[in-house]
Amino acid sequence: MTDKQKRTIYDIAERVGASPSTVSAALNGSWKKRRIKKETAERIIQAARDFGYSANLQARGLRTSNSGLVALLIPDYNRFFSNIAQTFSREVRARGQCPVIVSTDRDPEEEGTTVADLTAYSIDALFVAGAAAPDEISRQCQAARIPHVFVDQPCSLAASVVTDNRNGARILTDEIMASMVPESLAAGEGPYFIGGDRGLPATANRIEGYKAALYARLGAAPEDHILATSYDVGAATLTIADLYAHLGRLPAGLFINSDSVFEGVLRFLATLPEAELQRCAVGCFDYEPFGQLLRFPVHMIRQRHQMLIQRAFALLEAGGPPSVEIVQPELYRAGSR
Image (cartoon, rainbow, N blue to C red; front, top):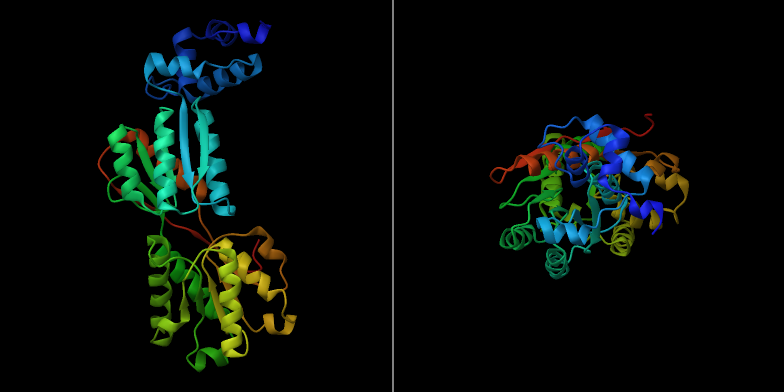
């Protein structure tokens, strides 16, 4: 055995000047319930890292029915969900636990299989972001008695934290229309809505906000302007290419629903002359830093991923009946810093 393998919680306790039970609470994530100061818990966790201490999670799971694993399901690794995963990992490790992150590609069958696999590992809790079948996931977790919380897409059976998609979409649509050429608005032409899945609450609420802004400004919101068929990158490229062919030009405005859709749209826009791009006002419901470097201005909605995850932890730790907490997004105007 090496010295690192021999380290125990008693060595850590001696180093930081705390009791072994305090060290144990910091490392197993129960320090909040014990009312141990955050600074103390962080000092203990850092000392454990310095010592190279590694708890035997499998043995601890047999003794306490806790594995120390906290899982997160995400649909894919676009920028928004990658930010969610990064914040989640940081929060889990701050509690002395180990994060497990799995992508399920918005596939209900894959979600169910993954939850079953995670249940077999006796995870301590499950966070679910952007689920395709949230209620079914919640039923699985309830049957296995796994604490769980939903982020981005709400669940009727469990606590959820979501972005105010409707209000965010209304604000973004207003900004797009304010940037459109006046002649287009005077002619009653509004922006087109590109991408997403109308069967999912996030897209459905964004469409409601988009339509509300169009009704307020133009008095109409044509259904044929809403092209919400998929989040897929390739599908987004085909959608904008077909729209361009149909109109014989770019529309006066584009509401792009997510950064993955944005990537697909950009693949087509990159083939067009700059003069055409300057005649189209563009907005994206996701924040993409590289959008500042494009040949044309892009307004963006920044979803507050850190607050979403922090509020999700608070709801999970508080317990209570199913509820939905709403977090307001932020508007990034093209050209702002």
